[in-house]
Length: 471
Image 1: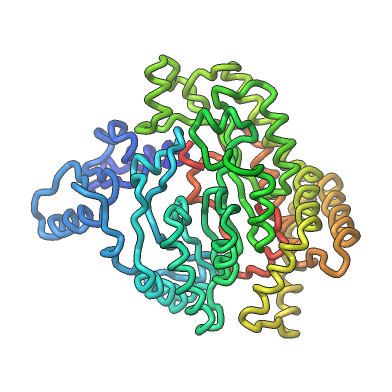
Image 2: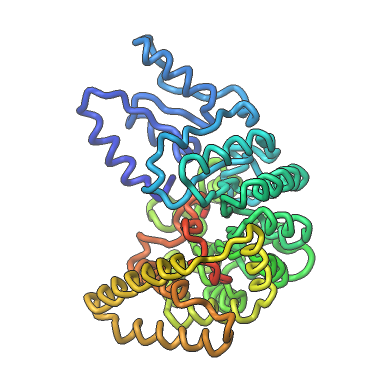
């Protein structure tokens, strides 16, 4: 991925003098192959279910291998074997990742998903997926992230899977909690949302990109401007018990200096706490990259803004981006949208309560004690860190103030102490990132890096607001 580019090159440079065969594959080499020609021995472009075994067989037999591998056709997803989750030390991972489909039917100008995987979604069968769910549970996982770039790219097939998954969850006492990614038109399909709730989905990443209709139209994000407002769509998603994590982009041609305030106000209004913001990035192979190159606006001399914006300078874009991210993760801004989002959505609270009752689970006294003990330990560590960083007064007092506000607004349904402690730890993490330089962009990654729900999903039940591409 592009955000790991420098580290990737550093590792490859260190391997040059060693007696090894350096092999590179994945998204970045697939869109910018020329950067790897002199940095590795073998490169894989695109999907590799067919080419990787072919290479491994030849390599194991000490036969000649090619410098470059690329499949003649897209992978038939129904032939993909079940991953060997049993080889993982599950205690070292919070979540198991699993893929149902590849490809997306939309035409977003900046997106490399459609250039790598195509616009016609290819999917695994429900029976195939059940085998993978069973392997995940057997390996010791309780949380699963479906990494599809758009889980609802083929709605009919997604619903078919969900119906089978619901039956499997019921038969096995709901062993898995799910999160995924989907386009915002999920909010227009109540049946899909109900099926996801019954299947125990708890979080979804949505690419909102911009509150400006002109910016969305420019980048062909048509699904975000159809029908009623994005705020209303997001509320319908939230009302079904899904925590929303959203992606935003600044730097479109229709953006001027006012966009940073517009983004901030929209995000605050939306009640989405966990947001990923990125500067627009022209990824090789995408229509955006080709258009900017044709217009003579592509300029790779700046690693943070590799093009010339239309209605502001690159420095203004970088400064505006930095300021926006810092504002979003100031404690009052973050907790106001989190608590307001939670307090203002009785539908979310009802849906979460119904999900908790699906499996008939009730926390035992020992379970509550363990949860409170874990929260107390986390609180002690957080306080120690805040003191060491000289943030105890400013941030610590903000955390206490918003905890009280949460109790005042929500009463018996308030975010629990244990959940709130972990939300504070989450905030500290993102607040720290937001205070660093532009090199550490919160949004500078593909959506696959979305931080999913932790194994103890109860700690995140209250993240109503919980809620990018290679950038």
